[in-house]
Image 1 (cartoon, helix red, strand yellow):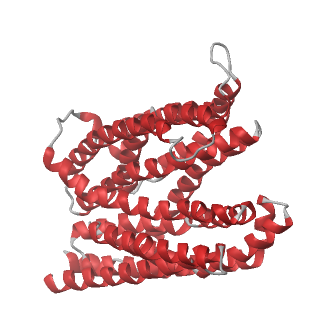
Image 2: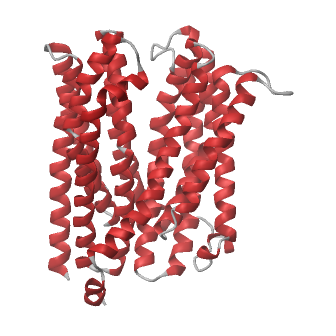
Image 3: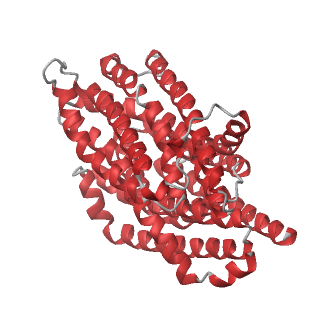
Length: 453
């Protein structure tokens, strides 16, 4: 079977499949990032204190949210493998068990966010920000079970090749968030005026609405009839719970290691003055928006690799991986050109301060330098997830970012003349190490599978 399929798949067919998956996923990723952006803009219109309070709350919520929803990415390669192996009856079980795991993890994440406000004074958060930051964290914690369960259903829908429903819901969520934020920020009827903390309540309610809409769509949609998740009730099965966590926990931790290294960079730079921190934040904001492109490609690669992994069609799987890396390279070169040509215009969106602008434009040059490495490492990680290899990549990201990039960045920023640029050189070194090791691991995995076939 595998040879026949290998012959029938072409570069054109695979590229079409990759883009069919990637484009809706990219819109979804941008929409989800947009939720935080709307909160920040609306809080900024209230007062500088409200904006700072939201920044503290979001800074703590995002890593926890990404860690726990990252674990649920395990649903994607498991469903893709079962789909490739032509075992639809297995898919329903995988997703039901994923929903159990997601619910339990969501409750744990929610409880962590309830405890977080007690740590704020220890973290040195100014007393003026404590009430609103604390209320924001308490409120948003109630949305965590919805976040993780939505991530499980999203993984199921995308792995079957239906990313569009998730995209439509994510875009609609942007429009719903604005009136919800207004109601809780400014008060309405019996709802009191909560200021920026109201964003926490609005976002939590929105997460539950998104979950209910996606679950209803899956329940009624024709496309999901063969693998209907809600047709039966299943008790927790420890075999699947263990399998989901074994696969998902390393994914969640790998994402956490990567996200936290970028967010702690601002803390490392904080003693060097406001101008440097502001310029650094602008450069990080630009690259994290552009990172959505290779990230979306990586999710598409997980699905396509996972499907061929289930079929045990190693030749077609390698073709997908090769095309994915070529596509990632083209996109990286395009973003590099875009950042180089329009860096002045991009920075002007964020600030009109002359000093901050100069430093930000300088730091963007470092961001341009690591685009290729970033695209290759995230694409390789996406392929490895599809092959259900997640533990190795987790250790690689921990080594690259925390054992190498972090100390190098601190040393160069604090003890040399490089200052802010030192942190970026540390990031470039870390990403290069991650890229080389992940590509090597992918090559070794492919060699092993070809020898065993």
